Image (cartoon, rainbow, N blue to C red):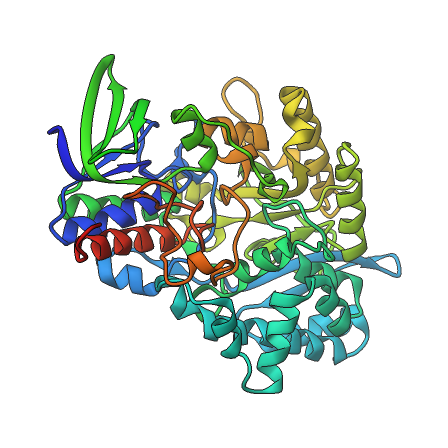
Length: 529
């Protein structure tokens, strides 16, 4: 390590690695500094349960927003595998258990499943028309995500071509998402299924006037113009490893276990003082890329941080290792088919209105909406051969309507209470208790790990556990001074955000990392930068 670099990247999460890879390949000297003792940040796989050789994606699970262009540009050795089942939603009709299964491979299967739920095929056609709006939006927005921010009016004119495009703009960018959901769909379960993509990770409701739900929905539906969420083969840690290989291959240097002590963001050069293994170091660079949130940056600069209410995190994560999959009450579907996709629990439209209202009142909802993913049904490489042979599976639960304030006063007690309630919600749809299927550690405890918003903030620095670092943004400039920028700029010269805090940041995308690198390269090509 020297004391002078062209660029210092603070945080070696996937976005920091993307930025370092692009810059290193351009011949620019880069140093990445990471507080954890591992590379990858939230994009990591870890041996969560020490007694078993299983590496779970601990904080993030699926990939949709990572542009194929970045994969090609950086030559990443990365496989994203399609799930055969899109989603499964159990329900009870006339006292009988059944399920709505949406297939990734057969429209006929999906259509028939919707017909059994609603009694006609009309709702399936309406659902198709609704999702066509998202496809229109994706076609017009996706390629711009790796370009400077367009002006809102200019962006809107791209939709002023036909009735379908204008309807897509109105439904997704102008009016609350709930208006379109209620206009197109009548069945409560289908309405809820659509709404979940507008609530994942954020605390909002269908008619939120801030349109936070719209922004969240778009980020879940526009990825690579399809919006399909795929399983990274080898787990999320494989994404981080591929990017680390690319960054090191480009010449980037990395340090882990770094304790940042101070930053200087004014003057001719940016400087960083930090401690590693008890020794203090100081380095300087022309550019500083920040791969964490404004809350952490403000603390380092000894400044106050005024967050917007929409920046509040609302997420509860449960990681599990199972000896086998549990059987379902909906006997029509085998468990591997139902759990292969996104398994929806208590996510009806009216039910989520109630859970949001109860959480807004400062109480843990009586029924907690959640989604379950089973990585190993699509990719079992994260398990040792011995565990695979015995039929072990991983399972992860993503809980909604669990905002940070619920856990702020007594995190341990509320985490335990929420975990119990989420498991009860899943058990309501199982023909046998989940507990009987969980792997057991040597000390007799179940292999289940829960993370509240408080835990996520403590581990990763994400503001109040917000998995997107702050509220998601629309993919266009929302003020005049943003037009033509890369959406990474800060109030300090040559200090740029390269993570989810940037415009168009959020989820495992690499987009902010790419855009921060492009901003640096742009500056180096212009006198005065």
